[in-house]
Image (cartoon, rainbow, N blue to C red; front, side, top):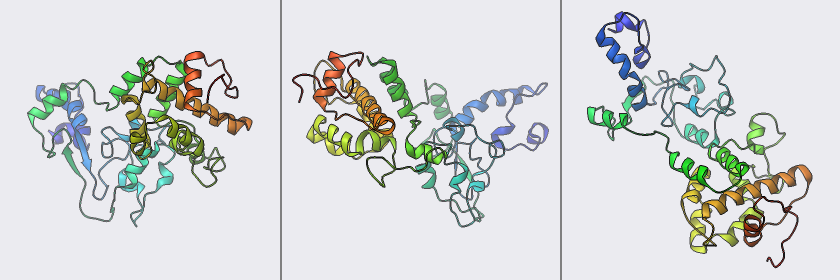
Amino acid sequence: MRAKYGKSKEDLDLLRPIQGSSFTWASFSKAANLLRKGCAWNIKNGRHTKFWLDVWVLQVPLKDVAMDTIPEDLENARVADFVTEDGLWRTELFADLLPFEVLGKILSIVVDKLSVEEDTMFWSAAAYGRFSVKTAYSLLNQRSTDPDEKYWRILWRLPVLERVRSFMWMLLLDKVATKLLLFHRKVAENPFCLRCEGCPETALHILRDCPPPRLFWTRGVPGHQQHLFFNIGQGEWLRHNLSNDYTMDSSISWATFFSIAVWLIWKNRCMVCFQGIGAALSPPYLAHLIWRRPNFGMKLGERPPNCR
């Protein structure tokens, strides 16, 4: 069948509908999407796996999380094409196109392009990597392969302004225009935070680790929860706060408070960057903004009465 229908294509690429093909081949072609959904690659020398189109880092191809258009000359390139003979990643070819969390996962993978050991395909839907009808049926009946579906549902149901919801959406996708991101895209002159000289300005730094927001969260997050709050990565931090409850006030959910807080912290950061001014936010002040001024009519520089 490979000789008849494959036409020099490799593995799953040859499973395409062909006009006039046999019933058997047509049946194989219909099952191809399920196979692509469940198959992934274990990287050895990187010569066989397509960097952008195959599944090898995440549960989806890297092209699905790319933040910009992939250059045509790189779209079908193999993993080995992105590694030097010394085993170093050629980050200049992909760093500007992928979220930072994904870059970290890629850089943790060791590829020896000079090795004779070839990449191997495995069935990611099973614990031991072996295909079975049971796991294929289970995969076929899954409602969604998006691990963040739960958090999208929480986010879209929050009683917040659309601008807040949109900002949280950008955060979950790791596409907020921080100085580090703009520096990698050759837009900003340097990647450093204006407040903390020498600290790269990531979204997590802006919203949690920079001294002003860190002081804010220290006052707002219960003491027994602070170790976890301040020591997890950006993606986990966002998901954790959308699904947990540190409620300061029984009338407001923590997910709502958290989402509005990070948006106001971001807005405050932009005022510092572009206008040279900012406001010292505190949990009581923020609660006042949320409930007394639901449309955020109060300027950040104002201070509400009887607020400490």
